[in-house]
Length: 124
View 1: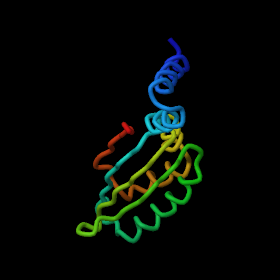
View 2: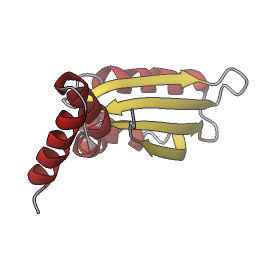
View 3: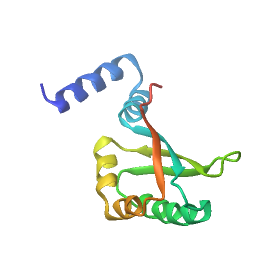
View 4: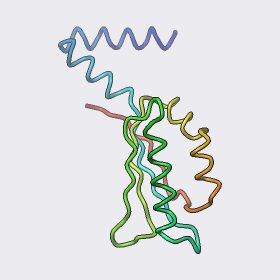
């Protein structure tokens, strides 16, 4: 059974139960991928150095096809910790982001360690 067939079947079911505009909105939300990721500064790296590098990463990432949102937050009580809130069209777009030269360049600087990655999906 193809992915297209499954998608078309689910869309048809939603269209029958829910008005088409609402069904389209629900399918759009369900297919997106949200990420919440925690980063911690590696030893001897300043938060200012990290902020400069991660701001550059953010400005390049939001230009990627498939990236809807890429927010960077710094913890108020622990300035060596950061949270990323990301929204992607799908898992493939996220994988392309991981492989992108600017993402690999950020990783190569060894400024932060990933403490967690949560992959989330919309339900309503």
